[in-house]
Length: 96
Figure (tube, rainbow, N blue to C red):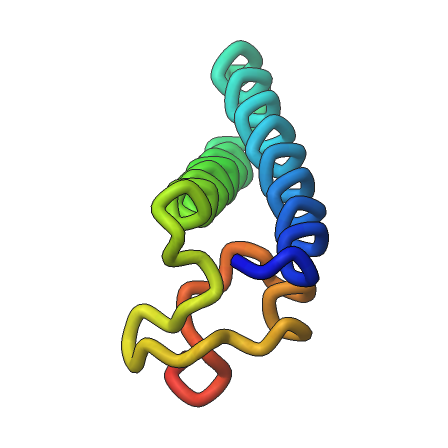
């Protein structure tokens, strides 16, 4: 990773870590108060929190492995604008 890319990637890492904490806290809160909510809404919220945790965890894993920013389908570099918009993106715009 070049020094010019390192700082922006670190900013995305911070965003991903923050998102991971938010999704984890939301899931914990839902688990504790689950019986007090509408079952349909509850299940949708739990699934959204779980998906958020999985997406951010996978992106952080790819960062630690050095594969972050590469499309999992074709191997090309994912556009920076896409990563800024969707930090957990696994595919380039063409392959998504």
